[in-house]
Length: 120
Image (cartoon, rainbow, N blue to C red; front, side, top):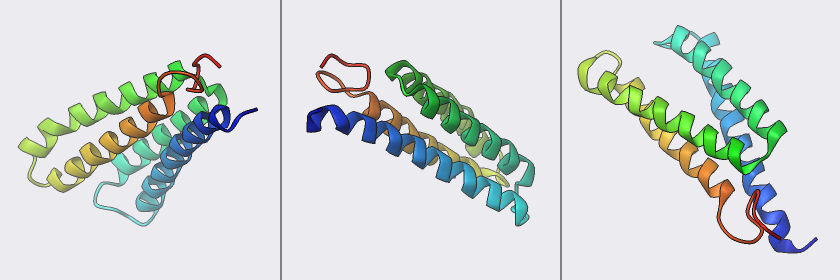
């Protein structure tokens, strides 16, 4: 196996690991009594489930769809950040997190030879 062929798997694993860390952080925040314990609990469950599903699949389509879920989540947080002063900081953090996770997922897909699901 060439070095190029292994890199995408590493990129995919990195995206999954980053997502799992985000899920764990949300879980810790929920247990420690964050300002948004219900949201943190729901997001912890979603991020960890998404990490498991994408990690088990490992396909380019799974990473692409996972990034799309993040785009939709980030977009749903924009009106909250604008309209809800109390949740503005949380929502803005979610927009940034969603952007980072989207970039990680779509970077894992890559293009051309050696990309996840690409030709070798």
